[in-house]
Image (cartoon, one colour):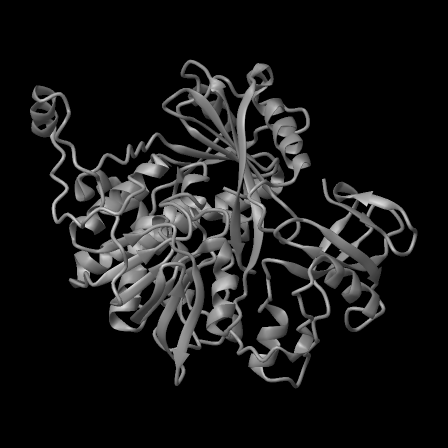
Length: 426
Length: 117
């Protein structure tokens, strides 16, 4: 990323083994910037606020699936610097309700080919994902989810504690406080490199001629006759035919500018990583009872996610005592973690809905669309969310993936209750 | 750690001693109200980045509910006050305006549309 504006380049060059060989011959002097850094035009067909994974994926599928490339993605900070760069990179689709299974499994299927699709290595690693049952309630909940997943055609299975111990020798299954009683296993689940997902989409969008405009905060939304007209930004007024708000924790803030309220509350969720150690954990582990989840990054760091704060805030830090709660619980199940030093801790602002399901919807303002409410688990959904959101913007009405996630569900009481699958941060 | 002073027992309580109860001063719409009013009461929230009025319970203390004015962006606490008041008291508004001179109470006067869409 350069700080200076550079002209839009139509082609950023295709990445391949031949490109590496060619660049090796000329001492890597020929690599181009992965995406352009243009000044905004006066008007676009579609303006997307938020250059995180969801916003960039929306732009990408608008171009790829609908041929709409007159698109600007505007971002207050830097590309992928919000929750896309702050999550614990877990990817899974073992949700309970049918609409969730449809959109999360769509996302997982797109992740499986995303590196080829974007010509950018997102380091998708389907290493297998295990949700531990440590209470009788969780056993019942996860067995029910396994049955539901079977009906949905999402391959998951209920496995017993002995098999878990064989798969993951570092685990202590005996308790006493939190014995491991079994788990819900999804072999196709795993992780991906979160920054690379944002970078890959950004590069593909830029190659299609879309504008990604960073350091450009939206300060106001102009409407006329109940329809969006323009957004006012730190880089001037930008007219648009369609506006998509894809800003996670700041959704309420942007919705207020457009003149409506959302059923969203913004809360800090935190995570931390340890010092790097040798490979010891080739699964993604989620322990919802103790509010902790764990995987090992390619660098060897143990990536640990914790619980959300109990109160609304926008601080990107998280409450101190949650670190202690998370670590205290995890070291009983993984005693070897007790000797590790933690290197970094950070927080992100998650957008929580009452039923723990996202919102992909039209709004009271015509041609303004929202994609928010992914709460604590948005990263896994990025490709599916972008796919469904592009369909919503291009057609002006939701397709089958987004149909059940409209704002109307809060009026009509058609909730998509995922508090079991998503009640904990993940 | 967030610290609030309970207006009932006067104890300065840490976050772990308290239970958050969400946005304060919601106007209740019950049976007989329209779907839109009920939805707005149940789900639509201001969720401001800035001054926020909210309910807290001194769960591991005197057990009483009270109200707090707090900044959600900086975690600055402007004060706590009795839950037996339908809107922010003049004292708490004065305390907020002393710290945030350009802030104005919007209360229920804000003419926002519901989130029906």
